[in-house]
Amino acid sequence: MTTPILSIRGMCAGYDNVSVVTDLDLELSAGGFVAIVGSNGAGKTTTMRSIMGLAQVTQGVIEVDGKSILSMRTSERVQMGIALCPEGRAVFPTLTVEENLQTGAMAGRRWQQRNSDAARVYGLLPRLGERQTQQAGTLSGGEQQQLALGRALMSAPRLLLVDEASLGLAPVIVDLVFDLLRDINEAGTAIIAVEQNIGIADVAKEIAVIEHGMMASLDSVHGLGEGLRRSAREAYFGTGGSNE
Ligand SMILES: Nc1ncnc2c1ncn2[C@@H]1O[C@H](COP(=O)(O)OP(=O)(O)OP(=O)(O)O)[C@@H](O)[C@H]1O
Ligand SMILES: [Mg+2]
Image 1 (cartoon, rainbow, N blue to C red):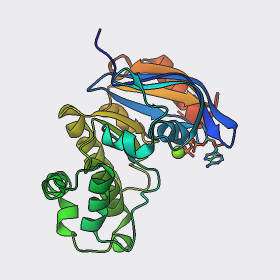
Image 2 (image 1 turned 45 degrees about the vertical axis):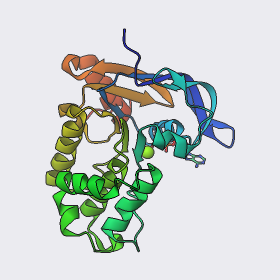
Image 3 (image 1 turned 180 degrees about the vertical axis):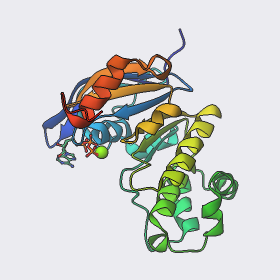
């Protein structure tokens, strides 16, 4: 069996010694694409932040390529090929589109390659190319989301973490972002996408449901059976709260 690109086992994590994720297991193979769904406050963002070294992991292991990354700084994790497109866009509003992308090149220690990396990102997200010199704070919401994604892609990640990329986007832009994630995945980058939009099931290979900081289920999209649909629904609406 090949070594998974990411393996999380028995992870407990949180903030200031308050545990919000308990005994979480998640494994992703190279080239894998898992979508994480779950209700507000379930611990999805905390799980992503734990992988980046931005939340406190108090128990368990996180391995990349079979080696623990727990003692690594966030910058070292970026350099080994992990990138996060954070929840809430978080672009630098007074910097231009081009300068925002350059911060991604700096984080990934790819300063020499920044121009070819930017050309690659503009190829994937042409709207950014049209707005290279515009201040990020004046971009539309959808454009800012594309910029946040583009910035994460500047470090040419092997493992891309995307936290609610579709939030607040028009359906046509959601489709564009999801199609882009599929293309990036097909080109070889493993992806974990936290999503509220169940349309992610059309592009992800597996779906994981997190409830109350614990993994409730993990299933292949191809086997997306009624059991998983029910638990995904319960994660959103609560038990018996389906409005179907
Ligand atoms: N920096 C922090 N300090 C203290 N508690 C935090 C912090 N960030 C998150 N929490 C708490 O941890 C719990 C899980 O939060 P998290 O952001 O991981 O949820 P989530 O599943 O991403 O939710 P959402 O769908 O609303 O984005 C919540 O109860 C939240 O209040
Ligand atoms: Mg979140």
